[in-house]
Length: 357
View 1 (tube, rainbow, N blue to C red):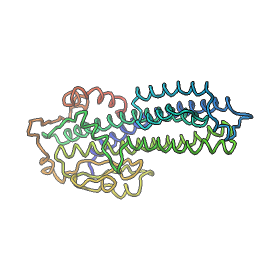
View 2: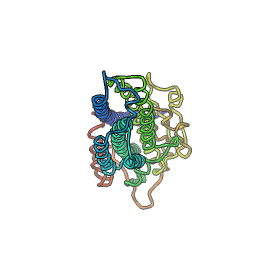
View 3: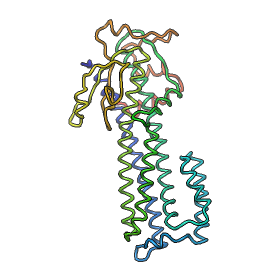
View 4: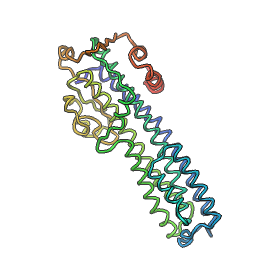
């Protein structure tokens, strides 16, 4: 089984990562609340224009916008296209706006749907940007932290290979289970928009008032938000474990030990995998390497059968070998070995999220 040293390092790394995800979740919640408030405002304004007794018959929402209304809507479309270009929103959304702009007329229902979709698109773009930073920082921090832990524990020269921006971006954009975090966010956006196209006509057909329609959309947004939280937890676990695996390969480590977080929330599959010894060359996510499932918290540590096994890890032919004293702090190590352009991110992340001594 893993030594106390590796268990403690594993727990600290998990806590650090967990705190960064909790920070992300707080920001995600705020973004969803802002978007939902804007959507409810759009709905209330729509009912204010067209409703009688807080109800709008379906036939009324299918009417064309009047000439003044359509002129105002065209102005909105220009603004949305500007934001779309400025924020680099999805090309599918840009095409949707251009097609609306080319239309001879637009119905009241289509205008409301376009207003609501704008807030969803901005929300999902913000989620994507926040998630990309969360993924980038966690991967980089875990990669270098794993190197530090290995070098300090072994006390021998080991090969050290820094990772650049391109390497990190390639890692966080890599697909597993046929998708990556980016495609999962856009798929969730598509699911929201599809639900919207059903909820809006259905609510008017059934005579729902503004509050009822707002509540229906709020429910869909809540489901989407929960998917976003699960995505962050699972994706960051995946990327942190991939960063460790990449370090294993660079340093020439041949075997790893599976470590599960054992408590009442531990899944049966992770409980069974705890203590499993696997070959680095045969590590496969969802099979013998974490994450094993959504919201997985398991991790791995290097495994050495004996001291001689530890001595066989790779040496760098370019002379970039490092040896870390047990007295060297991680901050000192970062300033000495991590590339200068990455040091600030490392130190800020560590200072904000690392467990307190």
